[in-house]
Image (cartoon, rainbow, N blue to C red; front, side):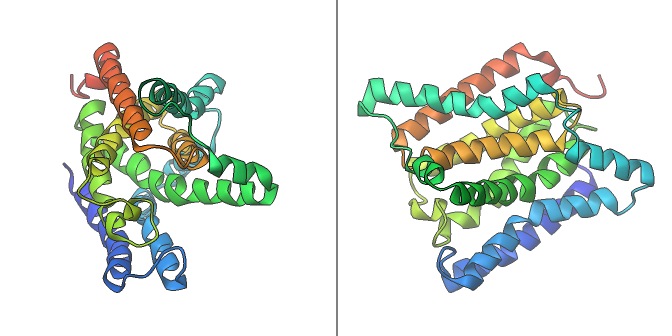
Length: 270
């Protein structure tokens, strides 16, 4: 692992964890306390702030143009891949909902989040913008735009995905002890935590696959991240069995992708 990646991780974790551990230490509620909300938001931009710094610090006009293209150009993605990256996770979660209904709960998610958003256009737009910037934009310039690009110089896409999954998962750790976050509403020592971290590895592999198929599009990574967050928000509240089934389907699909799609396992020096 290169020094650039190590310094990127140090800067990312320093920005995020300094903010988030302050919230945890002072037990500031991120939903109701202005300082808690501000520190939560600032910390969330750690990966993209660090990634942008390392991408641009020794940039030329050509590399800056390339960065802007990766970040803003829909042409890199194409219509077919745009459909795949926007609909893939909703399809996984929908399939999990049918399985949950048939095998366990005999009910479907109430989708209160979606009902609230559809009930007010302004509320829908506010939520969409929040979900777009907090998570997709605040993270993907770092995790995929910089770290994945650097890792794939020395590792296969699969190995790079696993490295990112490890640090991406660890980066979320303070959220489990932070009042007002979804993770903070769950007990840390539960199956949810294990499922969450396994999920991150599955996400990481699928986002790498789409990133490479869309000509290294950071925008593509942002949009699939948005699709994941929007699905989880729109269908909330949902049963934990539904979440576990979605994780199972995602990991099964990940295993199939690794087996079928050989370039994921190909080392760059081979």
